[in-house]
Image (cartoon, rainbow, N blue to C red; front, side, top):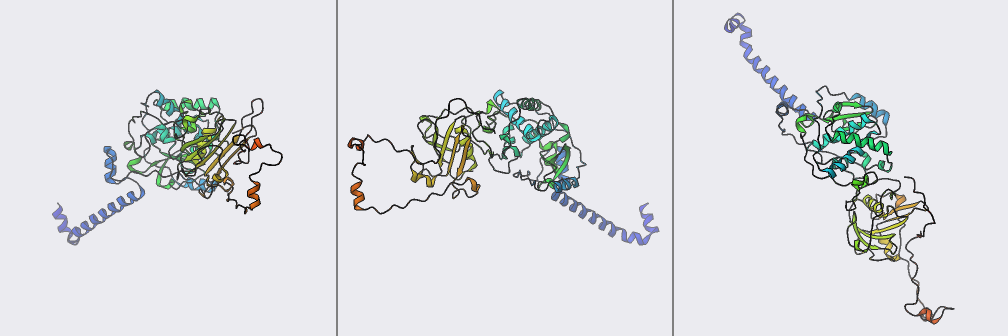
Length: 460
């Protein structure tokens, strides 16, 4: 039959092989171009689609988790741009139920970390809270993220900006939810750790409100909207259910100091302090005062070592880790001074310059790196940085620059006069061991005994 057709149409018969080869070549080029285009867009190529179907990990590298940077300066423009990004038409399967396998202590900490993310990110709204909780659990099961609930929620908290969940580094935690709202969030979090699934967001690992425009919005699949929040998953295999672990073995959860005011299971004095970022009160009275005595001298407290304690237990000197994030020093001050009516912390990053005892000499203050003072009765709270050492600190929080005072030339008469008792003083008063110690001059604000009665706590 084919030969008869060739005979009947000789002209077509002579060109058909060439045209057929040309068409095949064009088709192959189109498929290659399509595959390259899919790779550029982060979409699965043919081999990756087969890998996704088979549940195999593709050759493309795992997506990087970049610091979260949001631009909220033009909300109306952001809403218009977000509206132009279409929702994905690909299937949006629900995530598998997650069942927490850690022990009782780990589960308690995980519950509070998840509840904090839910209520601080979505407010006291059950739908929004469950949507946020699902993203946390999706991240927990994805190989690109930490393998504990608290690790996922507080990832990047040490940064002043760029943390993965903004409430952990933008000062939002200075505002505490009501007891009732907190318990509702904890109840929802406990349910999600026991298998509850919020299906509409599928395998989303990212979200943002519609009035900001992150740089990654156009590189991910937009799959759902919950109120004003838009939810995204990674394109290609890394956003499919095959990329997510069925279960995660968790044996321990880190204690998060920032949750200590809300959660007794996170009140761990040995935990490393992390960036608070709060602009308000640092030394919240919800924290129990640390029992700091002479036995702690030389031991680590957060980002440094304690070197001296003032008589009375209200003043402290520390040697801080050099090169660390200076905002962590504020966390140390908050923890050391929490619950104390009066407190001051003086800190140096150079061990050779750090005073070893009180009173601190005036000559040592020029090299001081950080200071914090609190007087609850008057509401005074002040935190200062050495801005020669930390030039990025806000100028309002810079210490006064101290210059060594030049000594005036001494006359011979001055030398002679210095050996005589001051007028009106008995000779016995000048004998060694009888002089009263000089008042320290290292601070411009003196700590004094609080008034009778209990002073009101400062408003957060």
